[in-house]
Length: 204
Image 1 (cartoon, one colour):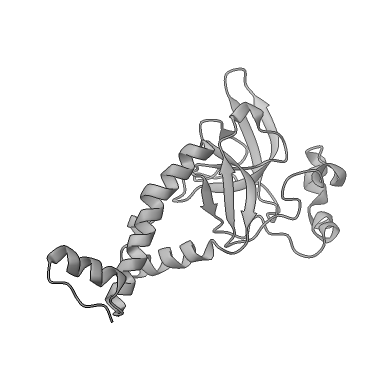
Image 2 (image 1 turned 180 degrees about the horizontal axis):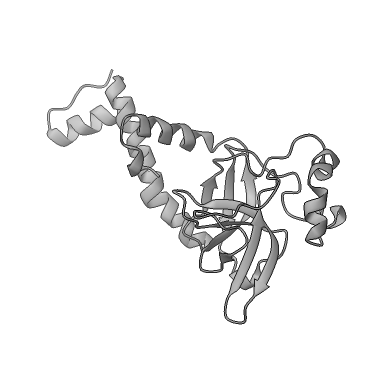
């Protein structure tokens, strides 16, 4: 076993890296989270051109159940009303959706380069960003507005905290390009634990 140093800095270093106590483990977890959030995460954001380079999916709104056509049959009427056929949809990114707890990697594609079928992340009046699929784009001549919908939702949400028919280009954050299954549960569980002990606001 490594000898415990005498200096204050040495004791701190020993406590973080060599101490096997529960408190040391908790400190290590918090330090790792702070390192990721305030150093690694901003660095990735600079590289990918968006303030949210990776997001954890926190809802079931983009999940698909069963085969593609089992899902499509439950949604067909809505998409046909928006001139999107099953053939069109099969050409979209994330054709089979994704799940709560997944990590989605984003890039900061310019808003005018977003197409129908892309999965985007945007700000709403909720404590977390929304990740849904673009089903229509409206150009007012001065600003673009996206209509979005969660693949698993029966209809678009329209209310005070989320109006999916009027997502402004100013609210747009980035376009999803890659999925890492289930890794997002680490953040979800961590935030839940921090919320339980009254520190959730530091990590959301």
